[in-house]
Amino acid sequence: MASVLRKALSPSIREIRILCCQTSASSLGTRQFVINTYETIKKANPDLPIMIREAKGTPARAFARFERGVERHVSLEGLDEKSVGEKIGELVSSSSTAA
Image (cartoon, rainbow, N blue to C red; front, side, top):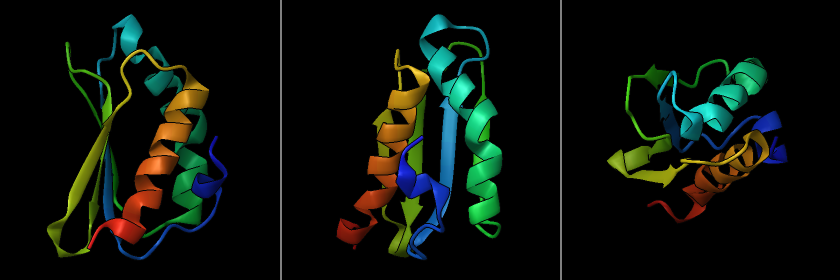
């Protein structure tokens, strides 16, 4: 897991949404990431809404909403668990350029 996700995230991050398919092989890494790291991220950020949305056929991706309504997203399609963590880490680290 990206080390940035093990600690409290920037207060400019208002919400994280992770979308994936519950059955597709291309969402497997995303599902494994959620199963293995959600609790750690939530413990470090208890007031941050972290929403997991699963729907058949949904491409794996993550969204971060920052202050002033700025929203960014990354594709997680076909990535393994470690790469998913790195991509989400990059996404939440982009908060310094989000205003």
